[in-house]
Amino acid sequence: MELGIQLRQLRENCPAVEDGRARGMTRRAAVRGLKALSEASLARVENGELNFRRNVGDLRTLLKRYSVVDLELIELLVELNREAPHDDWLTQYRAFMPAGMPHFVGLEAEATEILAYHPTVVYGLLQTEAYARALFEVQRPVEDTTSEFIQRNVDLRMERKRRVLERDDLRLRVILGEAALRIPVGDEDTMQDQYREVVKLARQDHISVQVLPFKRGYRSSNDFTILDLGELPSRVQTDNAWGAVSTSDKPREVDRFTRRFNAMVGAALGLEETIEFLEALTGK
Image 1: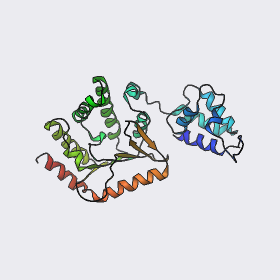
Image 2: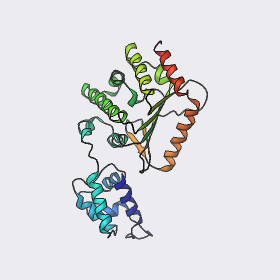
Image 3: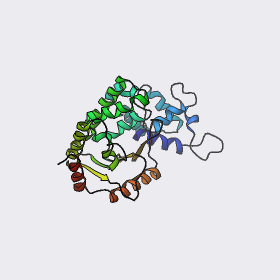
Image 4: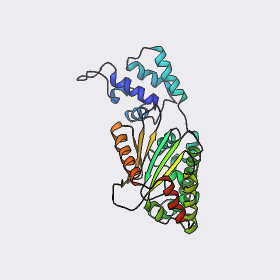
């Protein structure tokens, strides 16, 4: 992402090469004549979704087109490209992931804070394996998925959970709509185990869970996740109706979803009240 941000700034602020522009150049002009780099690929590079792993020569060509002559800056960007995480562990799952999700999962593991909300389903990083499997199974006849698809996605969800929650330098804050806990997924044992899992996680110092009960007041109708990436711009993620994952680092969008989250924090049960609510569901 840092490489992408710097390249976008260099492209947008370089000396103009096209008529009618005071400065900068379009992506189309930037990639003109580069066989291995398309306009769409450059957009992915600038969004932090891709790097020049296979052809660092294209990176050097772009820097030349952007009139970058500072040798230290050039080597810094080449080194950033070299150090970009490859997320090799994701390779086995990529064919089973919706568009945009590999990029989001890569960022998720690097976040310093995650704010998440789901109105109708237990948030993925809180799910048990049985709950996740039952969720995919109930969707199977409608979505026409395969057994392999379900197994790969369950494995991915559990691996994501392990990689994120084992970090004690991460803060995870989750709001669950009451419906997420009331709508049955799988059998009774699956739901009881899921309630106990959320209670266990909610008691950890770096994880907080709040239930937004059925009552009048503001609640977002869409699930979303906000990733605080430290020195890099924060990103907000939402799922669309086509199953793809959309992310944005536009400050206006991140601020809008942050306001939504904060509004629901005030209306949701407190941390201890949430644990009591969950324990009541387990019959304790």
